Length: 148
Ligand code: ZN
Image 1 (cartoon, rainbow, N blue to C red):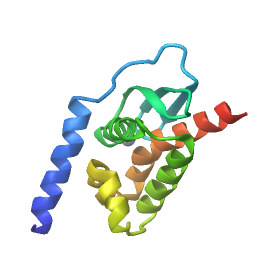
Image 2 (cartoon, helix red, strand yellow):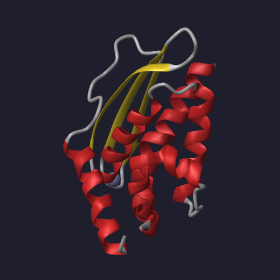
Image 3 (cartoon, rainbow, N blue to C red):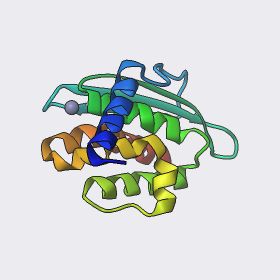
Image 4 (cartoon, rainbow, N blue to C red):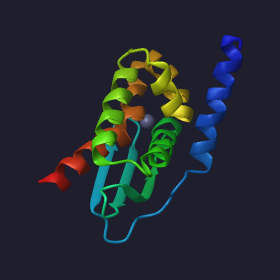
């Protein structure tokens, strides 16, 4: 695929998640509750999640406002969390951070990330990296609080 066509496709994915965020709710009595705020563009995210008895995420809620990148990143993150354990979520978060820092992902990770790959191009815009990472950093904090 040509480079600019790929860019267009990625932009469409981001805008689609921004306009129709997935799991736009707050989970009742959440085991994980995290909030993120990015003063740079006023992005806010509230993440709530619950696990089943095997420690697998079975409920996810994402609420927020702000720029398309922050909200799309949260929406895509919520989608990928379902069915994952805390341990695999930590690995996923590290992989995502690595991608934002400029790492190239393995084919296996690219497959796992799916639509999240649409955010890869954001790393060319350093001021927007925070937007893409907001939900992930908040989730990380929420998981650490939960473990305590
Ligand atoms: Zn933003």
